[in-house]
Image (tube, one colour):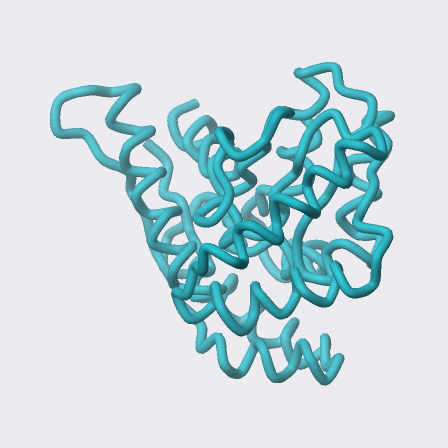
Length: 230
């Protein structure tokens, strides 16, 4: 079994999910008391949040690349960046290490392509939704990507991620607003929902949507387990 390296703390809540999923998935495949071989480096999210909101991506890159190099030196055979937004820096992180960085958007795009969907909606931080780094990965599989067309909705989702979910707060009224946004995206032609923030799957489940939901945390973890066991 290969060792999975995780850059976590982005936030720690979704990192808990990664840890749980990786171990459960390995156990399902190997049985008995088998579990995943994992090395975790958890960053200080308050620092990352401050740098993100002040658009200091070079500062974030230095932190994430340093974490990646430490994981490589510690013996990781592959890397997971445990957050969708931070994949804006995936190419820089990959250039800083020799082990493969498993890209969450690429793995999600493959999962969407398997469902043969033509159009999906992307929900995440405003950086994930509005910048091209994530959408382009999905579009490269001939899949159209839409996001909320209302600036208020984009800001609402972004604020909910950073100011609620990042603190472990998952409010019924926030879920209700998310579902309204999702329904509007379905009306615009979305055949699936990419939950492009590793906290959103804690709030929104498949039973909340009338179209397939793509839990990016689960997809990312499954790709790492596939790598580790093959």
